Image (cartoon, rainbow, N blue to C red; front, side, top):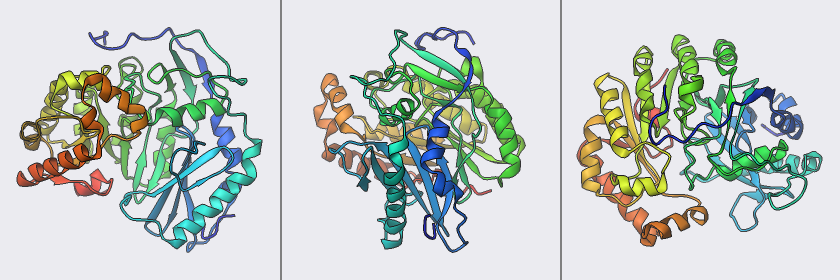
Length: 408
């Protein structure tokens, strides 16, 4: 087919009603049907190969040839948004993994074009993508929903010795600006699940550690990212289910390198476990030093002081540390650099994305000027210069572990 191809803490959201018995997700079968020719392909070593696929935030495919990795993402079709290509049902987005700064060459465009042609030929067999406003998508009167699910895969390769693990799907921290909301809801729509607001549903992978225990015997050790994109690994439900901790225990025992990024100081409960790893990286999303502003954009997340205190403890324990200043919000740059520089080894600086979703937050906070490109460019430059003056590196390649020099 493809050519070279604990008790509840104040401020935590209230926990929902007890979940139903464990279930198997239909979305994996939907994705397998769509991607069947690619999954069955047996390319030669010189051809593009399927590195991994996932169906938790839309449908994603990672293709690789040599050390070039491409992440291809299928989102719900939206003609108002830029993308690589469109099919009847999807926007197709593509970027180089680890080197998103580099444009696609002709070989990369050709192989993605083949993938797009496959999707066009097969998408008609997919379940209907009913919108929340109509169609046959079910509705629910429940304000929130937690499902306990059993999964077949947990450890997802990203290429070049990197993996990621999502202990949960969905996040009850529920930041309103989170750009993964629509992608995750696409997967729920394909599975025939009701639409709920972001932050009001979570799937708990109750057998994740069991599956991961098998997978670490089948894959070579590498860096394993747990990050607050599709799910924060330390969202409030972790104190009940401990799926993140169970997965970390498996990874540490098997010699993998956990890289855990979070907005929650609850990670401190697992610092002793992380310290047992041959290497471990702890990072926090810290978008500003102004906690009143943080509370307007991330009301379900921990205060900035709690995050920085957790970073300080991680640093004292000898863990590798980093900070992700994204999305940049108005801040006192000098003050934030002064607080973070002594306790981190590398930073990533980036802007707010999906401004069509986030602009109302800026208006509500009375800072519409901070939603403009000029603010992001000016603030990023000041942060980079401030950290560089203190000897702290900035990650430009979407590879914090590589910038830290962590290899397995």
